[in-house]
Image (cartoon, rainbow, N blue to C red; front, side, top):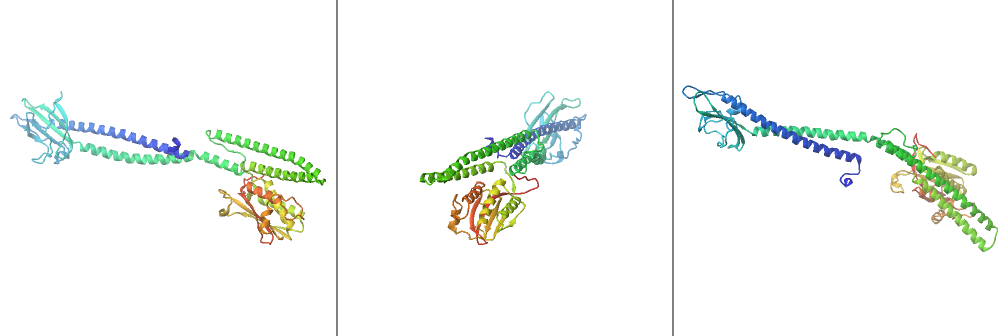
Length: 473
């Protein structure tokens, strides 16, 4: 379920979870702070109304004639602005329609005073109510009753304020808070992104090291890793050791099997060669066929066992140079030329397989060459790669100036055991072995008409680039 919601990426999951948590935390915190601010704003609003009411009570008096005197100054310009929703008044409790004193915001017909609220006073002779004025604003009123002088006249003061001021203050606070939280959340997510990248950097280093192991640059995951990754690195190293051990055992068993089968088959072949009987000839033919098949599948098993494990790196130029010297001694009448070979190209495989390819093809070319054999090794263009997903391949061309082969003969020549020229020594297995090796490595092998006039063998094989820390086998 979790993998359906989040992509299969640790970095994305960590960032997504952090983003969700940051959003929820900031949302919850914002709601709490906004509620606290509103509560404090309402409490401060009521305190302000009480302060204005006490100020009003102390600002007027009654003279000896029973007349109300005084000029209250509340010190707030809103009480002088018509339709502001802020006003005050002084009346006689039993004569509410007659204003003895009032604020400047109440002037003649210009007033937004709502009708009085019939609500009992508390034990402090005060009452607080909230009404809607003619402008549609919510007005909070504080009324208080008091006696002045020696008379028994009960006076009543009223102070009112527009609660729109509370809403505006809360809205301004919420906007400021939202802006701050957006900036803080974006900064937190950005910082988390970099923290995750830095935190996962050891995994990238381990991946690069494992790639180097795979490509043959190093033998194990060396280096110091965090305690969370070190056990994984240890298990990978143990797996590499186990893998190598299995491959070594497989190679040993393949070699043992080869010797165990080749010797009896050789004895059988030698025994039947001296006999002229048809049955002996048949046994000889079948023994040779068995020999060929055993060798074929042993070679394929050996290559397949190597291909999917830790990669060996074999620089091409040293192998080619060595074989050219050997072939020059074996065929002194033929001139061997290395026309092109980039020193940085390395074969992604075993050295003995590369030697077998060069050896078979150069030996075959020397037998039919008139004067010269030419070898080219170059990088295969990406658009001409023969295996899907193979981005790095090299192209080997070995051609001679001999008589060459027709198109039909070239197709037959790569079949196992086929010899087009019985006058030349050999078993006819060389070209088919080259084809098998190239195929097992995901490459290709074909015969073409050469530029020198003879036969040209073209082999496509996986390649690597030789680097300073590369190792070869």
